[in-house]
Image 1 (spheres, rainbow, N blue to C red):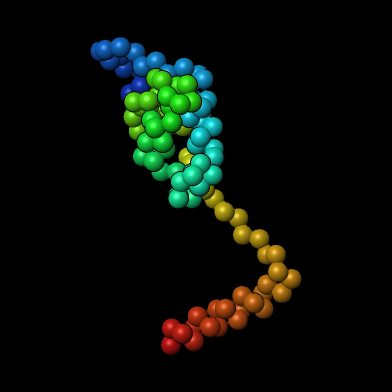
Image 2 (spheres, rainbow, N blue to C red; image 1 turned 60 degrees about the horizontal axis):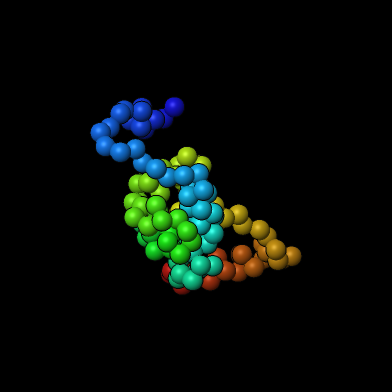
Length: 115
């Protein structure tokens, strides 16, 4: 149980936040796509960009409740699913058969330029 878990359990005044499981699933599905595949220029989502996109597309997608969703609500949805779309890990592969030679040549050029 993280430090934020205790804060979520504290009762607050006002109406309870009503985001259905279908709404949450839609946000998660968007977060799992790359922004460029949705017509945006970015490679990765930022929390602000995802919240803005959700708000802009919610009515057309049939999720009226999400049309005024905030950044923190989107963060909570992603956090509940342990998603961090802004943290993508890349694995390097050595595809070239003579990778070591090419790497040494490139590093030599960098070293010569820096001198």
